[in-house]
Image (tube, rainbow, N blue to C red; front, top):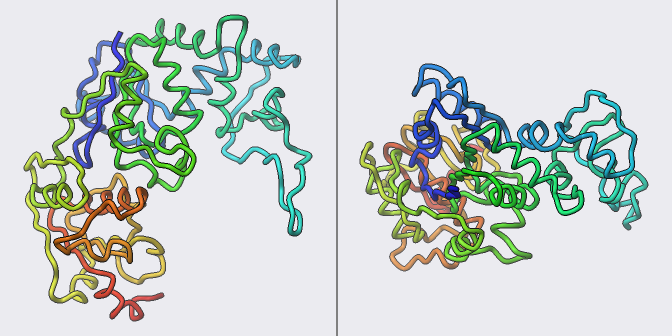
Length: 372
């Protein structure tokens, strides 16, 4: 049985690795968090094999949980909750489930639409649409005697697939992450690929296990220890070389942020402190990365966090208040909040060419002329 986590760096080719490491004659299941990830995987498979291999299936995590863990066992699930079941076509919805409490005027009251976890309507609406947000929670909740739904479903998955691969695992949180861990106890072969330092930057699924306990973020070493405690073989070296960033940029990130990233030296690019800041901002061919509120500016900009997954020919990172001293010799990343450090790491690793860095003070002089 193989249980492996591969920790990658930005631009190392996580998707490329998954798609080129599969055996096309094996029954492979590739799962990713977003539809954008899925599209990238499908495109890479077609590049590698001319088409998506006949025995390989690619799906989002929500689709995976619904079709592989919920739908085949609906009769048993309804029975578990003491509900009558008829084979009506169910579906999933992205709308939020009712909150336990809602705010009325200046205080909170019990929401009459809320249902407790021991009721099937906690997990689905009146139209029999499962809430995406509670799919994993539902799968984890169902038990019949000594057998859990997770174990039963995993045994079935082993009959249909030789390998289960999960891309961008750092995007999974709470019940979703816990479900993956529990499935891994029973799956014959499961492989997870992701970048620890890109967690908590996506705009969703940013809090909770495994990267945050209460208000405290789990550091890199503790996270490795946690994975090993779940009996994963952790590979920290196979995807440590970025195919996107030059060695000068990688060296800068290592020195300033303490993140172990090296260059595969596919591209060349320098760290540049521009003398003419306005010229760089006005250059439409250079993507500007700002901490937030990119839509407020008239130039070609994107938020640091929104650039996750992107590659630019050249980029310009405009620093914010807490990172203003990045270029100073005595700068220490230990002073940064974990989320800020991760967002900065994402921003600094988007360019496959030159990387321009502008301080907040320099930008503030010109800021008003670029406000929409």
